[in-house]
Image 1 (cartoon, rainbow, N blue to C red):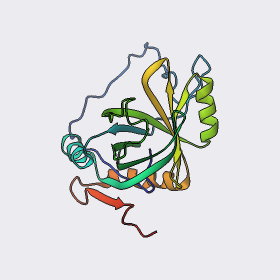
Image 2 (image 1 turned 90 degrees about the vertical axis):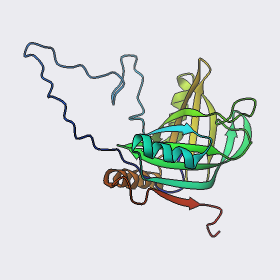
Image 3 (image 1 turned 135 degrees about the horizontal axis):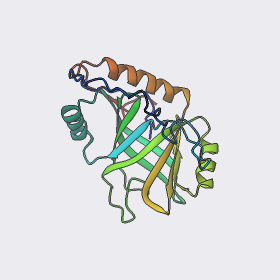
Image 4 (image 1 turned 135 degrees about the vertical axis):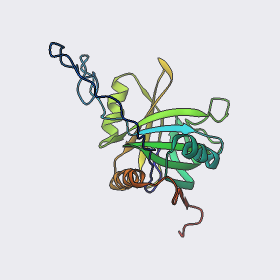
Length: 221
């Protein structure tokens, strides 16, 4: 899921240098991995690089502190009291949450703390909020076409929603429980958020302005 504005992240530099790897003159050239920016032998079209990895957390502030302390990831942009309205597995719903966004390289790290008890892909069938790694996501230039292609491959929509700024679609497979893939509509504000977040992460000194908070409950209508 993408917030209504930009985000940011970084990683610690490792001053250690690994020895250069060489290949014998008679060794065959390395093979390009299937599915990486190309069509696989099965003819399956790829959606490009994964651009987001998301975790569900119980306490967003604590989770961000852990990510900064243990992984050196930052700075973060936090969106409090954001929401998505749509359909979750055939049921109309509106989901409220706090979201933290940062970056590692060109991959967005998303932390989600759900604050509502309405149907959502963030909860088990008994209503219990899920915790831990949740989904991976791609930026989609044509979200309807990508959903149709995912359906053709045997996936079904788990959650299709939006918030006036962006649309998202989560897809799941009955044959692979726990596999959840998301498409994020690549609207200009989302692309700008990725661009500015990647730059902020790259330039972050690991200390200054670690968290920026945007609370939608405090914004003027």
